[in-house]
Length: 156
Image (cartoon, rainbow, N blue to C red):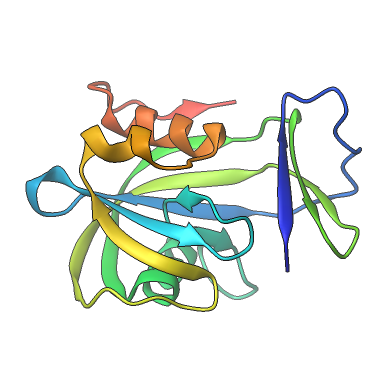
């Protein structure tokens, strides 16, 4: 399903739903960041997705990383809670979702990079290469918060 992100856009459609989402910031060898290129909007992102019934937030983050990248991981900390009502995501089925996402820090445990139905590319990206990628500002905010020296969680 295709999606379009509206970020601080006065012409954005009104939200008609909210769902709990998670994402995971994982650095590997040489501090490279685990990134995917999404199939639904063609942007680069850290892995993540929606919480499913019967799982914890951290279980959802581990599952999403595995499903989208092939990498097994563990959650090691909290980067932040993102709930900006000025960031809405419109899907082609008519749903317009207000952002509500919890971003975790994780550590890779193993696995082999692979794509999925949600990720058409999976890479370990050096920090200095992030500017070369089409990354949504909300994702870049999470990455910037993860890279800062303070380990206190961000929240909005």
